[in-house]
Image (cartoon, rainbow, N blue to C red):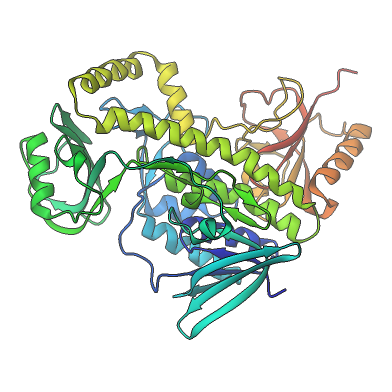
Length: 486
């Protein structure tokens, strides 16, 4: 076997997945059809949960240092913003950071871990058998075949891996399109959005002096996505809505996008797996696509590594589909709902925007619910057991006294499970031995567990009264037990 894993696609999802595998010693090769990284950043935003994911590997600091924190997010382009500042996280904001820089930082991480990226190498076909898989690749020096145990398609909405594996991609086609331009604005607006009965646009400042303008009008929404967008066309549509072009000049990227919404019927087919846009495509509403893709990779990485290293049966990979497919379905649902709010310019849609805006403005609990969903901080995976258990929920960066680190997330940096003893100091006894045995069975090896005895220094919903908590490498709770009442 040449490789444990071949990852197809060197975007953010493929890079993070490959880095997660290399972190624990799995051999992985990344193949990428493009000769160089695109200078144009489709995505601009990292959400709170993605920043937590990076923090769990000690990677968040350079992203936060270079990005611009914004304590709000938008839902369907509504002028009433979602308040991320109330969320229970060290990162209560969206972080504006171009995808280009996100990819550069993730590539640095992968290369530092000994990963390999083969650019100008295109996956042609994937075949699999009981013992592994083969990937036919076209490279600069001709075609060749990679033999591997597992193949992961992180190669976008037009995924060659998904198509070759025969995985259905049902959903809806494009019925409306939007406009996108990265331009210089000499007189930028004070508000992040403009909208009226003619259309609506979001205006996002970028760190290098440019602004991104994205949105649509009644007229532009019917233009096919493959028709080139001109600067004069973008300027005309913005003027129609805003009454000004804000001193628009120096365009460096102009593009259209559509609202096609599709999801892979299964995220695993034997030895082939899918993540990111290869598994789900949708209108880029709310800046969620890159974030959900990174979280796909984080869920899959530790599971695939455990299977590759013989610490878990390959049935563990079925939980990747079971946990992440519903997340993708919810992503399509909320982006389709946002499309009606943000890209439908009729009197009925305007009325819906008004009603929905008042709802977000006057009901903090509703605003909080949508902020929690878009940020992915409220995500909990299904788990058996009592309703008061933490199992399946996201673990916060719990403050800890007496631990080698001041909080939970740094303890996860090496990709192992973390078993927390949160009971009274010196009172572990037999219960702790039982917890270690249970944790070892779940992790597949005692070597994959970092056991820590500490006292909580922060409070979080549901954590009061927990004695032992086993946290998975992706920061979700694998198992927990309450303090004894003896």
